[in-house]
Length: 207
Image (cartoon, one colour):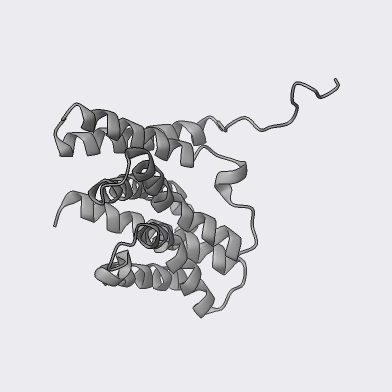
C-alpha cells in the first residue's frame, strides 16, 4: 500500500472524527453523526469530482473510504471522552489530511487536463469544502471564512507543487515538499494565532 494512500486514509479518518465530534456536540442522533462525518471526510472530494465530471466519485470507487468513516463514527460513539485529550494527535492527522487532499485534488485536476489555476482550485475544494459543508449543516459559520489560515495554506502548497512540477522535479519529491509547506503553514498559523486581514475600513471610511 502506497504511503500517500495511507496518509489519505488517515486524513479521511481524522476528518470523519472531527465531523462526528461536531455532530455529537450538537446532540445529533447516530444517523446524523454518520452523515456529518461522511460529508466532512469526503464532501470536498465528491464536490471536486462532480465539478470535473470524474467517475466514479471518490468514495464510490473505493469502499475503504466508507469503512474508514464508519470506523471513525464507531470509535467516536464508544470513546468520545477519550478522544478529546488526543486533540494534538488529531490535529496532526487533520493537517496531514489537508495537505494530502489538496495535492491529490490538484493532481486529479491536472490529469483531466484542466488549466493549472483551475486544478489548484480543485485541490483546495478537495481539502476544505468538506469542513465547509459540515459547518453549514451544523449551523456554524465555516471556519475558513472567519478564523485560521486554512485554505490559504492549501493554495500555498498547491502553488509550490505547480512550480516544482514546471521544473520537472521528481513526482514524489514534489508531493513531499508541497505537503510539508501546507503542514508547516497550518501549524505556524495555529501556534501563533495567525489569520488573514479582515475588511473593516476602506479609503473612504471616516476616521
